[in-house]
Image (cartoon, rainbow, N blue to C red; front, top):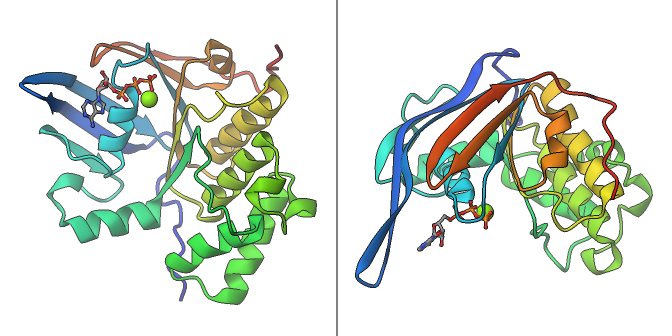
Length: 250
Ligand SMILES: Nc1ncnc2c1ncn2[C@@H]1O[C@H](COP(=O)(O)OP(=O)(O)OP(=O)(O)O)[C@@H](O)[C@H]1O
Ligand SMILES: [Mg+2]
């Protein structure tokens, strides 16, 4: 059996919840508190946008929610884990591999691999057999419109295409938790729109809890929920109705 991640939560159920998150960084003799007691949750089926100025703690929050960066205080409950940070490092890595997808501004692709291999490699880590990995990878690349460019390497792809490969890699896993950090900031309006629509679909059609950090207020149109963070604190948490026909143009 392939340990494929399946969505266990129903739309509207809390997928990840943090309580009292505090994260401090030491630089030289000074310590700065970057998260100052953050309570946060994200639900299956929602595209939750986290907005806030540079340095407000957005990337740090995502890292603490996803098992990438241990908070100094507070608790993260994720899927069926009541306290993610209480698990061993190996189990946290396993949890991330099985259930989390990541999309970053910088694409994070392997330079030597074709688009297809970028996706099959990650499915292989997850335990998928070769044939199945190939089939799922192709389907995911087709879903993002890259069917015809499957055999190209990152250097032969545009920025928008690279980001779509990263999204295909993420969607092929069918993650329950999808974290995107500024996924559109290196893209033009048209490619940005393709990316935000795919995130929207991951939430609506796959039932993932999608948490997307962005500076771009135009992306708000697609969100179910907008959370504003400033100086390590949540200032506002607003639910709204997404507009599936929204457009992003410069
Ligand atoms: N490893 C680290 N060591 C020291 N300080 C750090 C570290 N990582 C982040 N910081 C500091 O923590 C603060 C919050 O950083 P974070 O990356 O979470 O901000 P952000 O909201 O994502 O900003 P941006 O929009 O610019 O990406 C910043 O002041 C940053 O300099
Ligand atoms: Mg950041």
